[in-house]
Image (tube, rainbow, N blue to C red; front, top):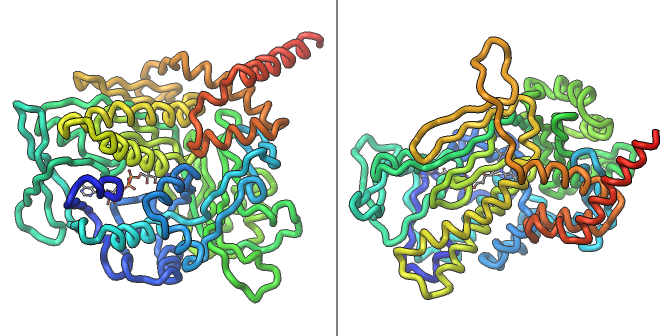
Length: 488
Ligand SMILES: Cc1cc2nc3c(=O)[nH]c(=O)nc-3n(C[C@H](O)[C@H](O)[C@H](O)COP(=O)(O)OP(=O)(O)OC[C@H]3O[C@@H](n4cnc5c(N)ncnc54)[C@H](O)[C@@H]3O)c2cc1C
């Protein structure tokens, strides 16, 4: 909405949750955080539309750059009013990617905003209302249920929506430009089929992703190398190690306890290949961590005070829809790399650029945007799915342009239906080889570690990791490894 504000006098947001209610809109920063910590159930504060709202979220630096351009006061407000801290990945972060510890003395520093998704969303919405309040109309507690379309011209002129608290029939709204931002559970594929008889091709990859997220206060562990790192991310290294853990600072606090680090963090224990951790009690989770994760995490988790319920999430998949929409509605990825909010921000920036060019008729904008957004999707899709193809129980479901559904599965259990194995695309095979050796190089190179993090943060495209000199280094490392092996 902020990106389009220059080009439309009036923007209407139809939102299924009651996001402007007193609790979400008027609470103080402390109250907001308190709600986050006390409530496990997203519906109880009127936010059932985003099931993952309490899960760990990091906003990549490119995403934050885009938000900062749109909302210049947001950063200061977050730092001064919300006790959020910016941290430096060079000094404050530790990353273990596919089993390789990235070099910490990065040649280029990257800043991260230490914030939880629930707070970020509320702060952003408040800023949107402050800056563009007189242009934006909110229709909350209302679900879009259908498109109003002209079948002969293949155009949607509006949408039908239904107020959640009312038993009355649906209402119509018309617009010059309509965007679907309803996230990965979007019904746009159904709406397009019903209204325009259009079939949207879809690829879904189910890799048994599980998260258990909670908020805690961190205390000294007696190991300064752990206590000095508010950000610690070792990802799952499928298929050898299918579990990971993410620690990200979300608030600074003043504590009278001299052992407190003055940090509130969100911590997520995650898995792929359906190797889920327990979420019934912290004690059981700790036992699981002791058995499945590096000792560091047991040490850190043992020295924390739990401040929220354990919130599980098991629905994340890679989900790509070849349709003109924005953000998660177009493409959702393995949350492990934390790409989707930034990917949605990049989509919005791209859409604004198309309008900024002032040369395209309104009717063509959606098509032009889709072409450019697809390139962003492709980049993020490759980055996210390369490892997922290695998941032993991977299931791939493809819907083609005729609506035919094909299912592939890596391995099934003896009692279930047997599906053919998925065919791994050549580009993915190449990336699996390249990433394996590239990441081994990063553990010895500050430059490559920094470049890798710039790509992860979406400041640069994937292909900077394949510059000739880097590619040569990757090939050399591979060759030396095999030559050494052949000597024995
Ligand atoms: C476990 C987990 C961890 C994640 N971690 C990260 C991370 O670290 N970093 C990151 O960038 N991303 C992360 N993600 C992804 C991220 O949460 C979302 O995919 C991303 O926010 C997509 O944003 P969006 O605006 O497109 O959709 P959403 O944030 O899902 O918003 C969609 C909105 O549309 C509304 N809506 C839905 N249907 C209708 C309807 N019919 N009518 C009206 N309104 C409707 C909803 O109420 C909601 O407000 C994670 C996801 C999961 C599951």
